[in-house]
Amino acid sequence: MRSWKIASLALLVAAGLTTPTAAETAKNVALILDASGSMNGKLLSGEKKITAAKTAVRDLVAKIPGTINLSFRAYGHQSHRSKKNCRDTQLLVPFGAATDVSDKIVAQSSALRAQGYTPITYVLGLAADDLK
Image (tube, rainbow, N blue to C red; front, side, top):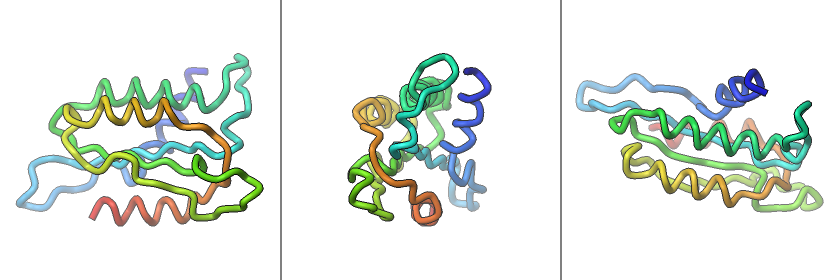
């Protein structure tokens, strides 16, 4: 399961740490959680993928320095797969200092229900815009 968490963290940190401009002192990290229906699948351990991803979010935000600006976006959580919603994404927590938004991110991720489509290309485009 450890290797799955590491792989999922690579997906969670969309666009990674951006290079700050001269006026910026903090770095921005856009966290993205896949809450599509496929995340209801189980790992070899029997744990649901969505549960492992939520744990990874909780563990990650606890380790991010307070000077980093975090945002949190999820996809696949608002519409059932039957609706075929290819734009099912939401910025759940806008950018803020990690010390200010970490608890909000954990609470929002904990409340997500995996159910919809996987609009990853659309979501990554929006996340790139979020980082601007």
